[in-house]
Image (cartoon, rainbow, N blue to C red; front, side, top):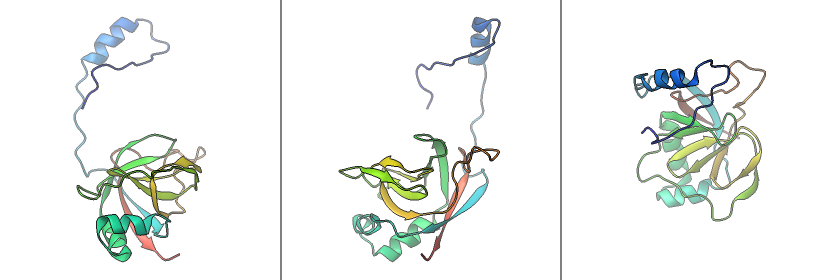
Amino acid sequence: MVPAACTLLLDGIDDPAAAECDIRSWALPPVPAGTGPVTEIRCRYDGPDLPAVAEQWGLPVTEAVRIHSSIEHEVAFCGFAPGFPYLTGIGAGREVPRRNSPRTSIPAGSVALGGEYTGIYPRASPGGWQVIGHTDAVMWDAARDPAALLTAGDRVRFVAVTP
């Protein structure tokens, strides 16, 4: 979906009006789903909210872990914090509401569910998502090129590991 209006800041352009006309004429082809590279993320499914998520799904914890780790997730977009991926794939009926009371600090590497998305916290920060596990994967490293481990279109498979 394309927003009705958006703002683009251009710096160093001699003729911004001409650039605007040029940009409006661009036809960007859609990126086919499921074509990005696959990254495996090792996850310890030991999050404090995992039992509540499993209960909401009407499943034992072990089955909730099996389902989440068997899905091929896709990065829809990144935001909130540098390197925070919003992963789709949990499917209809598995949406998870945000916590009634957000935590003041969620540790870096926390794997969490919010609505229809799975996310991975790149750094410690406040948050209201349901934490189901943790990973040692570094989501954002300014010294790495590219700095973000995952970008839009990438696919992710969580690999369940024992704590």
